[in-house]
Length: 380
Image 1 (cartoon, one colour):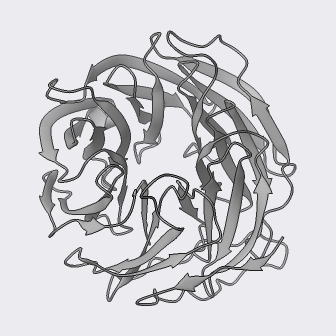
Image 2 (image 1 turned 120 degrees about the horizontal axis):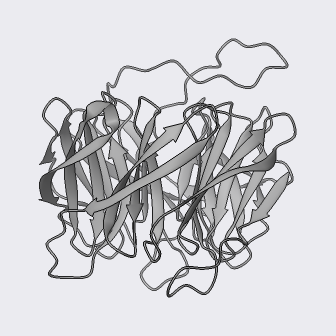
């Protein structure tokens, strides 16, 4: 299962943090917060199988003060690494292999050694996340409409899949031929995991057995038919979440009940898109203080700014900011929340914005950084 990736790096990212003290039988703990000084690593996912695509995961760094991205190298050996996530301890990077025969791959960051790839049991995995315990990797298979769980061992490597659930009910929504799982994340309570399915217009809640890595059905929350839900992002308070509906170009505030894991989907509202072109909202990000939310708009090529009100229960549209790129597929905040990165698929660029979390303002941080078919930016 293991192998060494071919890597060309300029410059080398900062070394991962040292081990945190832990019991021999305990999961690896998250690294303590680090001061943002000096260049920080930025990993960029791409498609390797399309014309003009990348050759692997782009290895760059960014200045946490200016936001400037510099240096360029590539970690090869992973096909179509379109979505990336990092272990809570910062030592292992995970990538989907978005192929018909889908996989998930682990990479040790200290020496960028590929620790192995495991099959997801489905087609076209497009999203993955790590459970806060650091013991389980969750992935969503878009093509087959299923979600998978893999164990993570003490080295960060992946074990054989422990569960696979295909979304067979309800029936696909208008214009859809089947289920399309687009995201699989852990709720803030830690005991429930939620899968967003664009094909069935449903958000599924499961309880994850943290000893066995198996999923138990808990609840379903349905959007209006044809909404095409894509990504869900929780408010820091843990009682509300914001859903980007890709097909009908809407945003929705959802309430969440931690004890039961039940999500209640509210009324659709505007993404702020101008309406002059077809728009596909992609992903929300929420500031750590819970006061503002940002939404990436593909087509409108903008970032929507919302004020978060009523403790997370309401989004008030403030306006949009041009993304200075084409088709922002994914956005991410830096760990300290002062920068926002947008991966622009069609222009092959990553744009960076300074974030004023006290006023919800986004200010461009220099020129876009060229990166072929940039579909995921992961700042550490």
